[in-house]
Length: 218
Ligand SMILES: [Zn+2]
Image 1 (tube, rainbow, N blue to C red):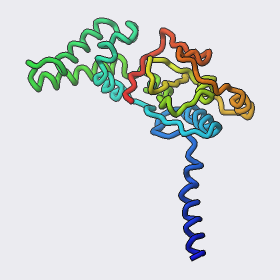
Image 2 (image 1 turned 120 degrees about the vertical axis):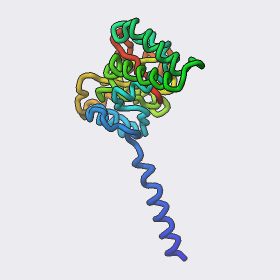
Image 3 (image 1 turned 90 degrees about the vertical axis):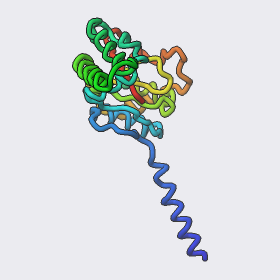
Image 4 (image 1 turned 180 degrees about the vertical axis):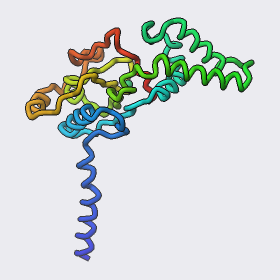
């Protein structure tokens, strides 16, 4: 009986062990730059967190699909700068969208054609402009990133704000250097006080005119 108890106890240990080693970066990070993955993994491990990636690499067609799906949320394309999406092209996309999604008189074949045209043009115009499409951006669940970890991440990665309360979009065009012992020391000194609701958590956060809305589908 005693033997059985110990066997059971050791079984429990085995079951519990993985929980203690769960800290890290979770989700699909295939196609995302190794340096970005390594940096986020180091932050997660340091703060003993499970950071959830909801969206990493996206090809041009994935981006176009997301645009079609979220066209109304994207204010019919008006969230994009005129340089990224000239007005003439935006109007074409909107016309395709209307035929495809909102024209009760359109025949099935017309709707299918409009859909194809939307995806083609959206892919050509904007498909490769998101940092996701070059593997230089990830979206992570905000709930998985407490204040200190957020501050550590934004020391090296830029957050592009899109007014969302569920995910953070982090990106870096430049290669993120490997984490040193000094980096980890500086992380320990980071405040755990909550982030300001205005979002002024660091100096690298302000979205600039060149930032590209990520059209996150998560
Ligand atoms: Zn994103």
